[in-house]
Length: 237
Ligand SMILES: *Cc1c(COP(=O)(O)O)cnc(C)c1O
Image 1: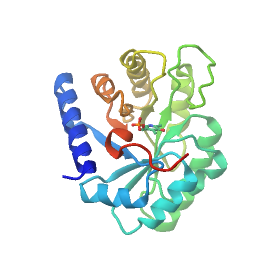
Image 2: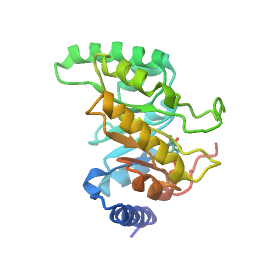
Image 3: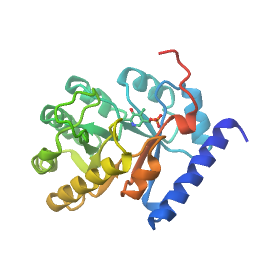
Image 4: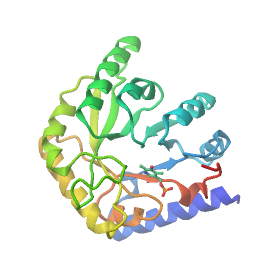
């Protein structure tokens, strides 16, 4: 086995173990392999190993990579911070955007989705997660984005009423200075508040290389795993 398939198998095994520990079925879990800073060739290897969901956080790199890999059957997820003016470009190649955290971005995504729907007549809705800031010290600018948990109901209503956008659920990154399970427990509560307003928005995007077990124990449905599978980022930046 190559190092890559070895690491992928090991992570898959740990996901199965965590699901069992949580009393959950792995069919409810989507693993997104985050390939930021990794070359397109690595994505090809991943596809050959059965991976279909890929995550990227930088539009400039992701656009080039997705174009280079257009021959493959892939689902691209955007997990990084997104400028409203780049929203329509990202929608062109990403089915799912995990980082929706403000009103202006919802507006930008909504308008463009409507236009895409007209193009092919199919249901081309962009699927989105509402990214929440789990940091307890309110206003702490960690640069990772995220709406305040206090805004869950209001933003759920806003996204639900936006044409061409389909709300999947909540997303968050665990703060660095806290036990991840405690933080993900707050995310689970926020998810319950969202579902009370939007009954279909039951997904929870949480869990990275260092904390996916804790995320699974707190109900995560979409895991965003990078380095535990891809190895260390190759590019020097
Ligand atoms: C990079 C990134 C990940 C993956 O991180 P790893 O620690 O490499 O697993 C997940 N989510 C987001 C938002 C990221 O930016």
